Length: 344
Ligand code: MRU
Image (cartoon, rainbow, N blue to C red; front, side, top):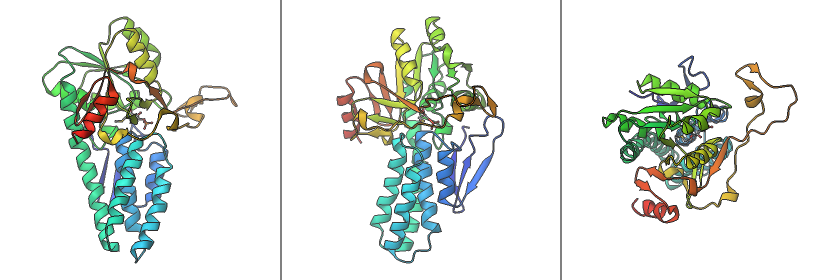
């Protein structure tokens, strides 16, 4: 059984503290939306779908926390909480999606009690649907994989990046469950090592054959035919098929093109941003200490300049297909993505 990353229980939000993995599997309980905002900011919870649902749970907590007695008062309390939650991480579009969905329900309700019930129920439903969506995506994607494939993945797009099951790792799980014999190569994913700490942890936990490589061995594994397909998740996908994902994804995709290896992206429709153009997408820049050390150990000189973008953009020409719960989009993406939404 795959891990449950975040859930609502007894009017509180319970999450796995991913900063402690793989050494300690510890759950944290929050009753204040500011704690949820802080958890998103500090990567206690991370991964686009997981932070989308966590943002929704954060707003549900805010609705319970507020002592407002009138609808207007509660809406303005929620607007403020939404702003605080939204500003935690700017690139993953799922966060805005989750927050907007909750605000829509709040605005449509008439009384304070109706808002409270409505937002809690909606956030819980979003969490349940996340798992169902990932399972449908897994089934759709598994058809692109064959017996004896060795599949490379970058970062963590697994159960830990969602409520459960995972996007890219969901496809891997579904492929294995369909009876195909597969192996996985996980990149370490510096600087905060979602690959070694999280992907390696959850695949090992589920008994899936996984080998860990340093990020610098991506070219070597491809050049030596140690991998024949690649799948990653996404934080945001534009209507043109531009994919924003963990820093390093662009390098993996470029190298895959060089070696004629199919490069797949798996993401739910909630990861698509049908409005923005590439120059409008904000790439989150994170603190220097993620690069100047590993854990508590310093690995760079004091005062060194650091560039630490959390995400990069992979252009559509490097992508073989985008897997969603509604089906698989193939190039040209502008047309196929439109069709996926029309089928919704
Ligand atoms: O900084 P993170 O760990 O939140 O980055 C996560 C990723 O880049 C994932 O690949 C992406 O969110 C897809 S998760 C299903």
